[in-house]
Image 1 (cartoon, rainbow, N blue to C red):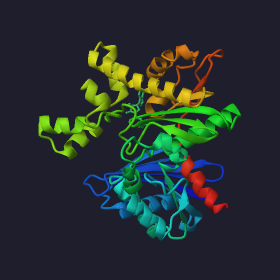
Image 2 (tube, rainbow, N blue to C red):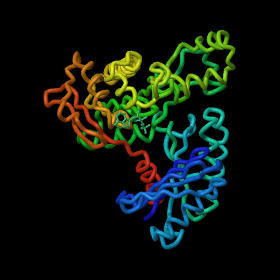
Image 3 (cartoon, helix red, strand yellow):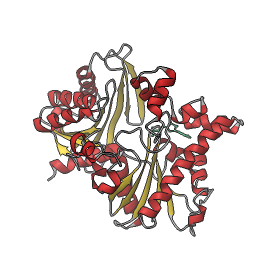
Amino acid sequence: MKILSVNAGSSSLKFQMYEMPEEKVLISGTFERIGIEGGMYTIKLNGEKIKKEKDLADHSVAVQTLIDELLENKVIESLDEIKGVGHRLVHGGEKYASSVVINDDVIKTVEELSDLAPLHNPANLIGVRTFIDKIPNAIQVGCFDTAFHQTMEKREFLYAVPYEWYEKYGVRRYGFHGMSHNYIANRTAEILGNKNARIISCHIGNGGSLCAIKDGKSIDTSMGFTPNAGLMMGSRSGDIDATLIPFIMNKTNESLEEVINDLNKKSGYLGVSGISSDSRDIEAAANEGNERAQLAQDMYVEKIVNYIAEYYLELGGADAIVFTAGVGENSKTTRKAIIDRLAPLGIKLDEEANNVRGEEKLISTPDSTVKVYVIPTDEEVMIARDTYNFINK
Ligand code: AMP
């Protein structure tokens, strides 16, 4: 059975098509610059990468182009072969604790939740509406980034602010990267042969969040009301003192929107180093003796170590620490800097095993008190699984 896994942004659309339940990727690709001049798309098929330029006036043109490519490349003979389309949706608020079959009510609710994710939910919904229009016979499933964290206790997700803010306006920590942390929870439990394992999942890429997992459930996570909270990231500040905002507005005459933009786009690695939001550039500059790059790297590591220590206590110990996403899967330097700091807990890195990129591997020594893994994340397959499970019910 063929299932499409889709991630629609305001000007982009990523997709993978799976043969399920084998979880075989048949074709994948990305459409970029939708609605902007200079549209283009790339497709990966049979180990080959094809890049094409095409004006993509809107999402409807992008999805039609995708369908044409599927037919031309004989990935499908007819549209009816696509039994399900799974959509990554960013914000499900408190309404959705798991994936859901999309109907008019769900669309209305996700629309209402746009208040909480004004950049993402409306863009996600454009994708949903386009696929309903183009592939009407497929079941459409919504998979929320927030859903996995709905198992957090109130004491973890509430901010210490007036309680009415939560009751009236939904002010609380929601957490994101749920599809990724859920994948890591499943895969690690499978590797350990223990579905009750205590796992600290470190999703560190351009965005980053940590998640404390017990019995397959999220019990705490570092992102908050928005994805700008928690860790220092590529260009996001992570946690700050909120009163910085009016202070800087006063000093610089920037508007509120401009300061929020600074915190999202000009902070993190980029803000501290003044060089780049990409950890490869930071590592290279630090190696050449650039002090601010080294400072940015030290701060980045510090935050992650602090969260690991916090979650270690919260979980009452840990069975595994897992590194995933761009930095976690690829940067042995960052992993080493983090694990070396965990020595007081008896956690030890196997330096030779740590010499790994983008593949599943145990990187701790046999006598380490906690197993440390690199596990490439796979959010797309989680979407395909959830979609398949609705059809196969
Ligand atoms: P993601 O958001 O998960 O796609 O991660 C993207 C980020 O991963 C990039 O911005 C880099 O900071 C980081 N990254 C990718 N490859 C490497 C690498 N070889 N070494 C260090 N960092 C990397």
